Length: 368
Image (cartoon, rainbow, N blue to C red; front, side, top):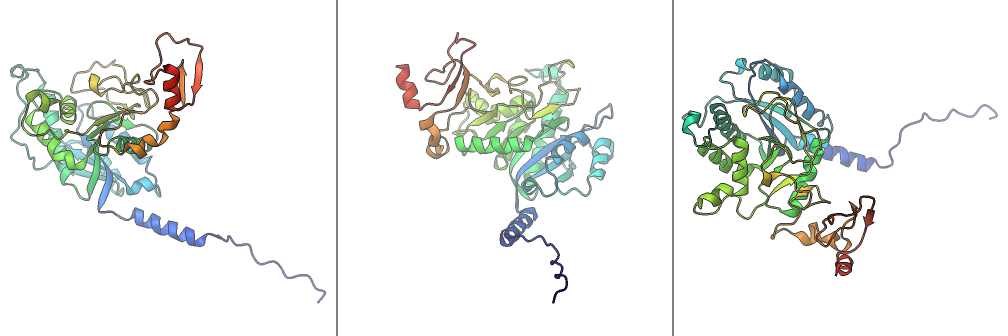
């Protein structure tokens, strides 16, 4: 008694939500455990360049930077790199990066050893109606082989995305792709393809459709470049033009285009002999160049959306996915008032900036 008070107990970090923390840790551990399926598999062909340049290292780095340890997307995404050179050692970039990433479980490497379509050979361009170069024909054959490998890969994937080894995924690109898939699925749960970049790059497909695509590429490699062939496949164009029996794989299913480009091209040599000074689209620029007209994003049709077409498919559950906010219309930032279809009238004054928040009924009534 009368002495100094006892020292306070040492400070300790006490978590009042310990049960919640334990639950989250358990869920995270489960998410990081190898699953029976992968949500998105990025399929990437790799071939050697005569210049010896290694694009693959930078391309994979751009992806892995968006999949740091502990990130939830690591449980959903992986990469399959397929070497198209006859021998792995011939492709130094492939061999070097494979050794560097030996401990990275999200990147797998495969070699085209036994080819399903070994009997297919490029034909002389002079004998082909569209004069597709032999190197382009070989690229299409290789893509058929690569996606056959992807179709057989385990664990199974729900979605696959075609990616080339000289296109960098833009910052936050994986989150943008997640948003694209969710938005497109709300508009059409049965979509067949989603495009978010150029060429045979940035094309999201359902893994269940790979056998049909592989068959189409292998059957028509002499007619058109591969990015044109994939378009006529997912649009149903070839099936309709040829009046083929039965239903096309694309029947009753839409393809959708993202507003923004999600990949940046760092390669300088193209099998299609594109000019070296051709415009290179930047990250998140409007997706309009380097594509067939029916693939580009249509700003006039979807001025306030980032997915085109922005109308739901007939069978889509649009009442919940889209129609929920229909009574409130949209918040339209535009140069001038929009008409009933949502378009900006021609000749609207440049200085008129209108923030419109009205219901469709009110807008329709004022337009009458």
